Length: 196
Figure (cartoon, rainbow, N blue to C red):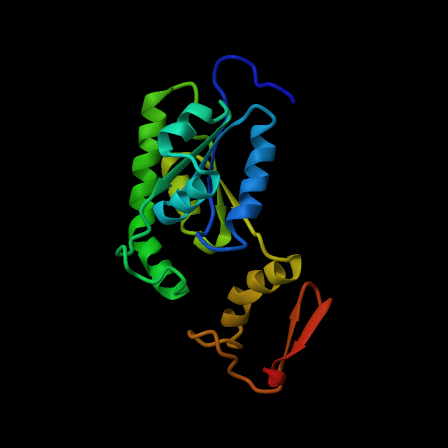
């Protein structure tokens, strides 16, 4: 493990989308980053944070007592009522959109004011909550997008703005032209949109 020199220490804030298949990959990356002596604050929604603590059978205080110096688990609200269905991706996304930016900004300000040698210098956010990257820019942290999906899925997603610009997709994500071909990745992957 390479240790960071005393003094100012890089501090990464990691923010996954709160769903299966998103938290674990970013947690693995965060642990790898922390293994190099870089401070990592892993931010889940309160609902996911509570599930993680329950699976570890630890309370928040136990977690604080046991956490390594390089990795901290914390939480923010998800914007949903306690009885709301957190499996409803649309409702969850709207709740996150309405509360996450302000909650993260408050958390970052609290972190930055508590230790001037470990200010948040980088925010790694799941691209599903891409608006977090705007928060990074506002607070002066380096924004980094993280895609827990396959490379092919990421390549397709990155082409969506071009498909809209060309008039191939409407505002609802539906293809306008039946039977057209959409080329991705320099014609490496071509899909016949008439099949969808």
